[in-house]
Every structure is written in C-alpha cells, then in structure tokens.
Length: 220
Image (cartoon, rainbow, N blue to C red; front, side, top):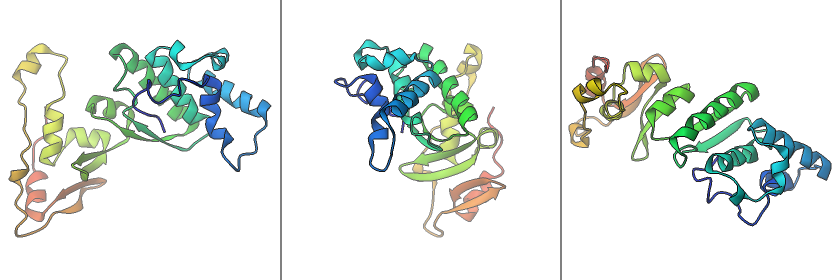
C-alpha cells in the first residue's frame, strides 16, 4: 500500500533501509541479509533514489523523496496489486507530475494493478483504465476512463466533471457548474439497481432514471 501522507507514514526513528525492507521480515519469507540488501537497493533504484540513501533517516528527505521511499516499500515485496490512497495529494504541485509519471512507468514495467484513490479527476483520468465514482460509500457509476468522461450519466458524476478547472480562463468563466442534489432521486416506486447501460458502463439508478440519463448530452 502507498499511503497519503509521506511525512507520517514513515518511521522517523528507523533508517530508510529498514523501512523499505520491513515487509521482508514477515514470517514465511526466507530471505538472507545479502538478498534483503539487494532487494532494497533495487527498489530504491526503481523509484529514482540512490541505494546509498538506505543508511539515512526519513527527515533528511523532501516530501517527494519520502513518497518515493513509500513506493519502494510497496515494490520490494514484488506485488501484483497496490492500493494507492491519495498518493500525491500531500505533495507540491511541481512534484505531483514526477510521482504520477513514476507510478505510470512502474505500472507498465512490472505489470502492476493499482487501486488508485483520489479526488482529482484529471489525475484519475491520466493513470486509470477504469473509474468507479463513489458517493457516500456507494458506487454510482463505473466505466472505462474515456467512456466515463465522454458520456457521464449519473448526476453526481456529471457534477464532479463539471467542477474540473479549465486551463483556459475564458472557458472557465463560461462553463456551467452543476450541483448534485440527492433529492432529485425518487425511489418510492422502484429502488435503484446497479445496471449495465452500455457495454462496460454501469450506473446506479432505477429504470426511469437510466432511460433518461442514457440520453444525456456529452459534457463539453
């Protein structure tokens, strides 16, 4: 798992080498000390850090470097599935792109699958193949990334997408911001179901809503 806060997720009293290798000490893993050092050095190199950094403490690194250490800690176990919980939200804007590009590169190199949790939809669009939109613990829409952005159906999804800032100031001033109101749903006659409206595109709603939402225009 890659944690949200690179400052509090690392043990300040432990050296980087031990932090990265901590998972290798778990019962059932028969790894020698030499093998452990080799795995740690490789994990650090894979995230763009020098192997010599293993002898340092977390407070000696910047926020972006600390998050790279957290990524190396996840990689050292050679996982196939990684939970990334808001991995860039605590970083400076200038560092976010570096970490995102690193995660994308590692994904391709190692064949990784990420469960990428984020509020920034532009970031989600960049790194995710499929997107699940969650409202108060319930998945209200699930689709391929480009399909979701091209044809959002659920009112909550459309409201989220309408709030994405535009790089063009003129377009930003002229865009229409949608506000989601749960009172728009009337489930007294029919309860909502999670249904496949288009191939690979699932939406939570009743029959009347799904018929209406499927005809909704594409957001500009």
